[in-house]
Image (tube, rainbow, N blue to C red; front, side):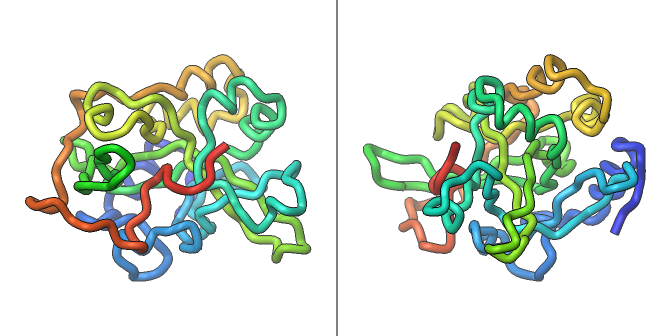
Length: 224
């Protein structure tokens, strides 16, 4: 586990841990097992302010969720919801996190049918630092820490296959994201598409492939 107050130092440490083709994870499962029931390593500030890696479930249950929704955690929160709804803005103030990953995957659709899977990564091969929110589920559901990605409209490159993309932070954005004194305006200003010319898009298979149940889209499940 890392314990650092400087987000830039943490970024360099995480870069050493990330391996090509996989997400930084607790278990040694391959990337297509990163479904909403899986656990991933998430960067957050702990009780005394230090930064550290914590295992969390992909799937967030907000405090205001109705009883019927508590067993259906959110995997994505739209930036528009975070900016426009008071409850999400409150969570933004206290429950920010980052999910490091070397790449993310998305399916191109024709009509409503998945036709080909693509991987997106940074040209620099540094890990993607995806902005997220986390929360602890009520004790009645097991008191599980869970996270959700924040998504924003797709940039020019991702827009070729999907209309949404995860919010990716650069080094300056990471420093702001973990700054406990950052203003709401500055935080919301980070929830924008990443520079398209710094990303690389590659087809996972040369031929169209049938989507498998264990190959989920970042945005295929419930989203706020």
